[in-house]
Length: 145
Image (cartoon, rainbow, N blue to C red):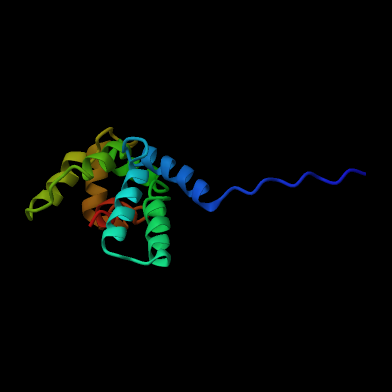
């Protein structure tokens, strides 16, 4: 009987790089956005004089920063319509004023009406806050801070 061929091991860095590409798509960012973010982080770490072990932490942290952030896309789409547009617009919005966050939410609430319509989604969101439904409605807003 023949021995099974050993499967090649995928290096962790390559696996995380692939997952970061999926995060780019899920977050409405251009491809390799997270990879560029990781490279910038590494350059900053080098300028700060971090040792090799600390730079390794920066490298892997940079790659996994957004991995999994699109997991709640279903819930966000239920509240805001196009969740990819919501996430993409969030990263390009200046939240310096007190009114900017609520205005951003209102602009995106029911972007494409969910089953019950935008009005019902707004009523449910305002009545029970982010805990209405699954409690994930605020995640992209809290993550970006």
